[in-house]
Amino acid sequence: MALKDVIGQDRPVNILKGCIAKERVPHALLFAGDDGIGKRLTAVNFAKALNCQGMTREESQVTGGFLFEVPEPEVPSPELETRNDACDQCPSCKKIDSRNHPDVFIIGPEGEGGQITVQAIRQLEEALSFKPFEGQWKIAIVDEADRLNQSAANAFLQTLEEPSAHSILILISSRPDLLLPTIRSRCQRISFSPLPVDVMGRLLKEKFGEMDDEQARLVGVLSGGRLGYALSDNLMDQREQCFSIFRQMLESLEEEPWEDKETMEGWFEWSQLLLRDMAVYSATGQEEYLMNTDHAEYIKAVSHGAGLKDILNLARELYNIKRRLAFNLNKQLTYNFVSLLLRNNLGQSGRQ
Ligand SMILES: [Zn+2]
Image 1 (tube, helix red, strand yellow):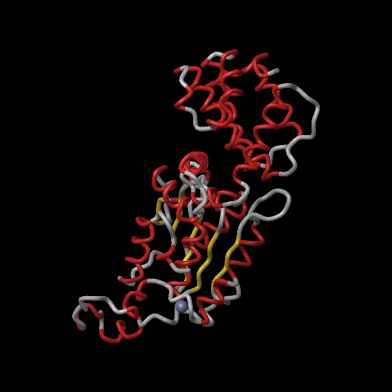
Image 2: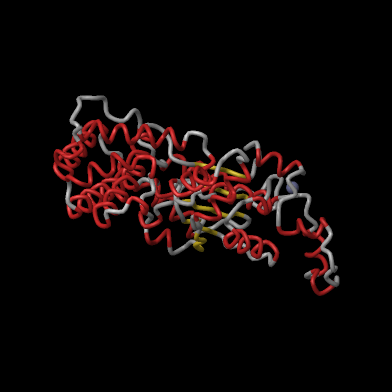
C-alpha cells in the first residue's frame, strides 16, 4: 500500500504529501492521536514515499521545480501521481514493507516493563549518524514514544537537538502529553482524528459485505472511530472478555487478574465505554443513547443501583489509573485496588 491507501486520515496524509512535493520535510514529526487510527501505518508509508525509487523526483531537482518547467497535464499521468507517494513496487518500497530497509528503523517499547530504553536510543543514534546506504533519507519511527523512560528521553532529546542531515524522526504517540515538553516542542505535530461513526459504518460494510447496518453501527461506535480496532477480528471478543472481568470484579470473585499488560490496558479502555453507558442511562433513563446496546440489561441493572455521581467518580478514578499504566503498575495490586473501587462506587447493584 501507499499513503493514498490510508483510509480516513486525509488531512494528515495531505500534509505529508505536501511536504514531499515541496521537498520540505520537517526533521522531526510527532504523529499524535488515539490508538488504532492509522498513525503507524501512515508513518511506514510516509517512509516508503520518502525513499521510493519509483518516483521521478531527481528530475525536479535538476530543473529546479517541475511545476515551472512542465505544464500540469489535464489528466495526471500515473507517473506524476506517484510523485509524492510511494510506488509500492520498487525494491525500496518492498524492503520497507518487509522491515529490511537499511535506512528505515522502527523501534518501540520492549520487554516486561514495556519501555523504550536508553540502549535502544543509543543504537538508533548510531545508526542515524551514517549517511543513508540506499535511500535518500534515514528514517526512524519511534512507536509509542511516550514510553521512553527518563534516561532514554534525555538521550533522545540530544538526537533531536543535533539532527544529522538526511535523517527524519517520526514519533508516534496516543498520549503526547506524557512526552517531555522539550521533546514535544522540537517536533512538528501532526494530529490524527478518529473517523465519524457514519463513515466507519460505511467502510465496515464495504469491507465486510455481510455485515448488516446495526452490526456495522455497533462496531463503528465501539471502536470509537478507530478503523484499526474495528478491523481487528477480535474487537467483540475483547469487549466480552473485558465486560466479564468487570462483572467478576464487581461480584468480588477471587479470580486471576488480567492475563497480561495488554489485557489490562484493554480492560481500562472498555470499562470507560461501559461506564459511559451507565452514566448516560443513569442521567437519562433512555436506552436509545447506549453504545453497548447488546448489554443494555446489565447496564440498566447496575445504573439503577448506583448514583450518577458515583459512576462518574469511578470513571474519573479509572481514567487516572489508566494514564499511569505507562509507569508499569503492579498487575495484582492494581487489580485489587480497582475491584475495590468498583464495589465502593457501584455498590451491591452489580451483584446478581
Ligand atoms: Zn517505491
